[in-house]
Image 1 (tube, helix red, strand yellow):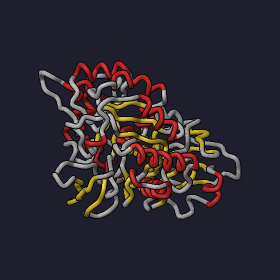
Image 2: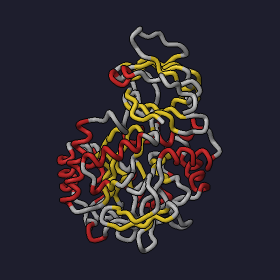
Image 3: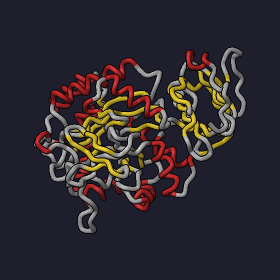
Image 4: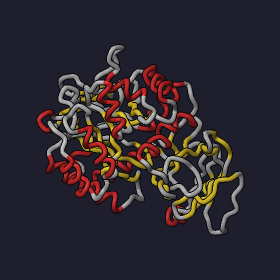
Length: 400
């Protein structure tokens, strides 16, 4: 592992969540500059050219490396053989351990539209893992409900017979109760009856509302933004696209400043030029890189599942038997490199799409940057943007 000394992380650092990071260039105020970072009990206590520390704080020598805020994946359905809709608590932890190797310090498990009974089961598994916290992988931060209020015309891999024909707040209130308040993100189609009225109620329940899997027109989509929608789910995929006479949901998402847009940066779901278009239209603070990964992420080609669907992965491309794309095999580590390659930018800009932006979208005020008072969620990468070490709340959860 380039630049990371073999004695970089003494055992006491893992036990206490405290250390002094030295030798790295640290992302601060949009620039990578030499800094020392003092971490005490999982929180960042100081960031300065030189930090005075208590004598018993171990030193993490990261000479030659870059220190970035940990990546956050807000939209993923699984990895390494585990499908979120079928994952028990240990399955979710297994995903978290794999994600740590990809620079991810926090993630949301995305529950595909399923039966109410199975959805409740998924929520209970997530609640258990979130409640116990993580010391050996990326932390599960919450749940993303992708449905069931979605368009049948743009359902993608959603089972049509399980989609709701009319949005009812009672179901979401019940889901939030079952989850222990951990549903923090939900995807809705504006045209489903009752959705515009539902948005303020979900926002009051602590859910950030996104619009997607939708054929909604521009006016209705804009009205939902007025009601509180703050994101567009995998913009450009499973939705009505822009037309010069009807900008539709796509146009509303690009135009409205309040709206963040998810981008699957694998080069398949979106051409590199499309990613650049999003960044030109939205700016570098309103695009969130996601994986939309399925259980095949981190595994070779073959036959897999996504919720109730059979999925075939060939050449790394995940599709339903009818040829419709069904998620991806992307990881955020690869997305990080892809954004740099697509846009000709450095890691300091690309990392915003994977850390600061998703943290801001979800209101995770303690995450997304390396600054005093924040959680010590840090990923160390080399000059080629390879993941070298992942730290969650001061504890090393992965080392290359």
